[in-house]
Amino acid sequence: MSIKLVVFDMAGTTVRDENKVTQTFRNALQQHGYDVPEHIINPLMGYKKILAITKMLHLYETDSAKITTALIQKIHESFVRLMIAYYQQADFLEALPNAESTMLMLKKSGIQIGINTGFSRDIAEVIIDRLAWREKGVFDFLVCSDEVAEGRPNPGMINRLRQLANIAEADEVAKVGDTEVDIREGQNAGCKYSIAVTTGAFTRAQLAPYHPTHIIDDIAEVLNIVL
Image 1 (cartoon, one colour):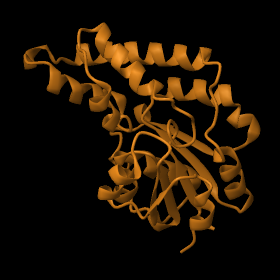
Image 2 (spheres, one colour; image 1 turned 45 degrees about the vertical axis):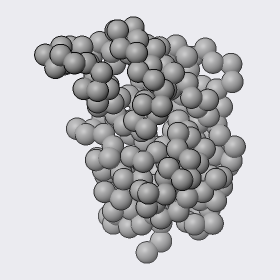
Image 3 (tube, rainbow, N blue to C red; image 1 turned 180 degrees about the vertical axis):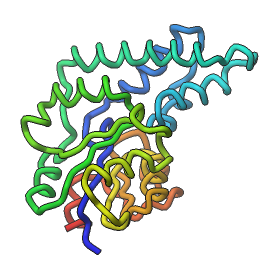
Image 4 (tube, rainbow, N blue to C red; image 1 turned 120 degrees about the vertical axis):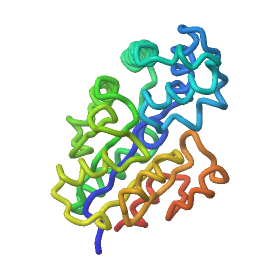
């Protein structure tokens, strides 16, 4: 069955990251008294950020009574504020090489493009606006982690994109992302392809144990897989 929808992640997959998401996440945690090293944060970057914060607190807060919904929300609010400020002010915010041309080529071939992200909608919209992706017409649908009941690796965002794109069968969908949870999201959603890219948080060796259908170094390789 041919692919009718390709779902792309944002930071590290289609948007250049420069590890700023991890750094900002670390800064938000530090503002609330938690000093978490980047190598601990990196593997969690594909997750819904509320869940990532919760996981970090359970690792670094010895008093479980302090891990409250209010604390998690305060840290998330700090992260969102810092992340929006960064994306609004960053001089070099740009798409990764071949990301826009790949999405446009897929659209030209009649395939719909979905974007999903562990970011909340307010952060994602700043990125979309700065890159002028609506004006360029590079995607059809955007679904963010705060718009579904559960974020990755739950398939909720992909299922929502399938509804928007009117795609009946899961094996008419391909997922492309740079993290372990991107791969597992695609697998859990029943996508025909769960394609991992090495342009983000994980190396080829780190991605391989999660058994993506493909591991690629250049997002343009999606064209050879899907078309």
